[in-house]
Image (cartoon, rainbow, N blue to C red; front, side, top):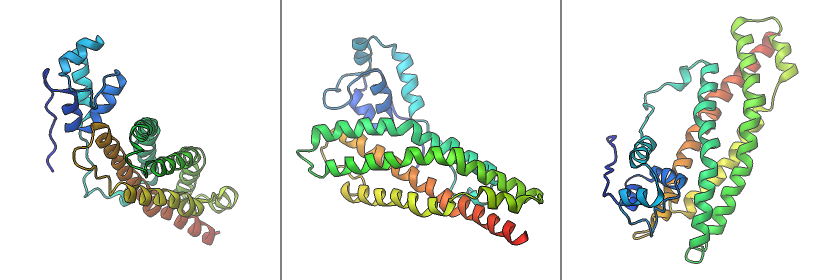
Length: 250
């Protein structure tokens, strides 16, 4: 698929802008502009009604849909461990910290207005709340404990420090538990979310909020898959391999 900018003109309806790209919904939400069923007003009129600088809003809309892709040829496995950790923290952790509150709000709004029509929505909401309850402490634990520990043993391993094995025995953290327990909870959520939403497929003729909600959940799904891949398949196995080698060399 080719990357392209969306078409935003003064007379483009707010609902049509969001339909073109769901990410613009965050900008409209920021300014309190309705984009669902009652949002069928031209952009210029919406700005006039809400006292918003049209050019400022248009710039933010264009900024919200900037496409930045990582090539499939990127060899994450060849990256230095410190760089990989910083990438996970600054890209994937930052995404979750910024977007989980917004997804929560969108999903709760969707559930409130549509649960009579879709009786499985409360289950989806409960699953998402449980995921959020697991993820936020998980990110904090990684950033404060696991990542600094892995950086320490990586530096000791590369410089062949004589105290390296002692460092592992003294500071060894439950990396394997994190790989298998907490990430398994993420996988369980993703399986449930995909099943309930038919892989985030909104039925025909659904409202814009429905479509935005599903696209945001799909975006979260893609993000979590990449995030857990980098940790479970690259970072943590490297850390465990270093631990074993340092202990054998003692």
